Length: 341
Image 1 (cartoon, helix red, strand yellow):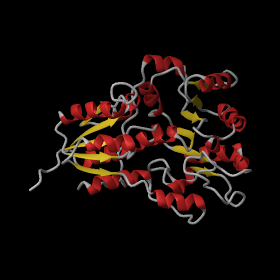
Image 2: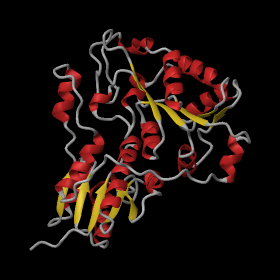
Image 3: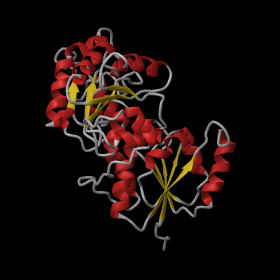
Image 4: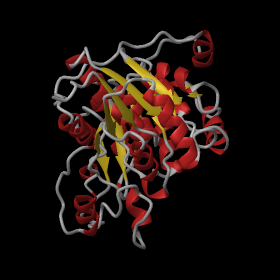
């Protein structure tokens, strides 16, 4: 008779959005199976995403230094074996994780089914229907291990207490806070900045405090310029740690984001999210967790019938760079105001 599973290694190394999408699933697991321990293997930068989860240990995979290559992964496996892990839930399923799993011979291992065939049919136009969500694909891994998870009644953490640095950055007024993350990894997912600035300008005239999120460097420079142009607009890019940004996000009234990582960061904390979609589409399964489907602002598929042209927004046919012309700033503002009522 096999030993009952008491300790699961959960592997999810990257990217930001995908790591964030694991958090609501793990939170549900912990609630429904409080006696089972989880150890999460992820990159050091993502460790703060799991700070609100009890009974979860995070192990850092330093894949660019001490855990680089096959030898580095072998060293990592030797350390992980000291944790007395009973089973492995691979929520990443790439070459690196396949190699790592080889060192756990005899352990029960289940990896995510990414649904590549269904996604290929969706972007080729062969089929246009809602695919299984990524959250459910993660949950399916645990169900195969013997732990079905109900995701229908999530519980979210309370808003975090803000640090003194954060409070000083946000100013003294107590207006409701709206987060705006205007960037995305690929052009096909990024709403034109000049249009987004019109959204920011309009919202800044209302009774909201607008917080701008982005990466340090070029994005931070752009957002700093915008924040200096309008009242009640604050640039956070490059000024805070990820932990401090997450704590601020947990205090938002709403997040406006592309189909990008920031939407999933807000959703994992139970914050309302308005998402803007260009050449990608929620049907691919990457809609933020537990969000109203009406909170998606979609490009007009009648004018651009090949949407979604790709899962990640990195490829699109000629002319499809114009998809965002079908989404006006007024449409986005209306969605925000409806969601906040």
